Image: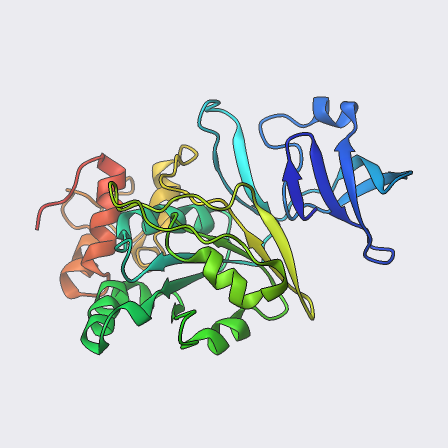
Length: 300
């Protein structure tokens, strides 16, 4: 499925690539609970009807999802993209300024679903070379664990490497509003041009331009799922054991602590805290973990 809007869903048929508009069989609606019935990226079986319409009869089990909790129904997962091969988390170097804590929440969502992660830093044309280096300093701790791409849709810098990373995969593109996702996708898919939102002068946050997720075919087996701008994320409740695992920098040291139920926050003989002290775990990532674990920011 490539697009969804209310009760209507756009699907691409395997036999010839025709695009048809489909609804969901009522029985299927009753069967699927606790998650979206269908989502962009789902593989579906449908009965074709006249006038390029169809009825979705079955949705194949998802290998993984990029999702969040719907704002008004806490126990229902809102699937943003189903079955992605990887996710590109997009943040701007400026306008708006990068938000590492938000990025950390995005990363947790992907780690919990075992989705390979890339970080894309946009708008590098807005700063001079020292400014780019300052941005690299902000993202340096992430570069230890994830591919980080620095790009400009204005000058084209970094775009060739990004296109190589996308080639032959289904990639979800996600990030806060105003960071340049639409501009990025306009360069990747010129025939499917999107409106470009600016940044609110009152809040410094982006104005939404993408209404719903959409899967774009870039050719040669490359697909990019454009997702709505997200100013905040409400995560599925994450058990402590999964929270520490979702910080991959901590994983080599999990199970090495003196206390089996160590929280890695205050206990003595903690392998994780010792690794932070040695510099084996970036302090910024550890502080983000503690903040999420306790609900408090870490001093120092």
